[in-house]
Length: 124
Image (cartoon, rainbow, N blue to C red):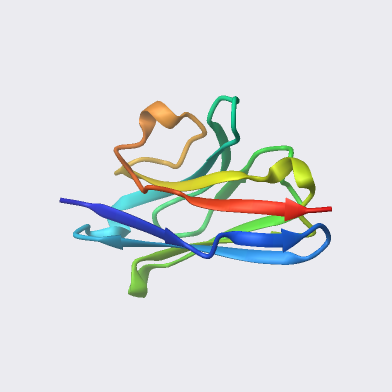
């Protein structure tokens, strides 16, 4: 059974920075493309970023380009999401997801496993 556990959420000031982590347990991590998605209250879940299995390629939603950076550490089964200069509109519950033998697309339906999420609140 694959388990994804996020951490690092909390309160951040607009213009500050925050780093989210997601650890995968019970998985051959290198076989999974990974993604970050978020869902704000009353809104649909939306794609934030993804990374291919070997970490060579990343993809970002237009709304977070140049502010967020996703990376992975395959030796420690971890993906990170560095959030720089966040704006209040990015506050949401952020979840990581794993896509077995996938390419790390932007569609949630393609992902096989999901974490419980970590909440990010941005104060202005």
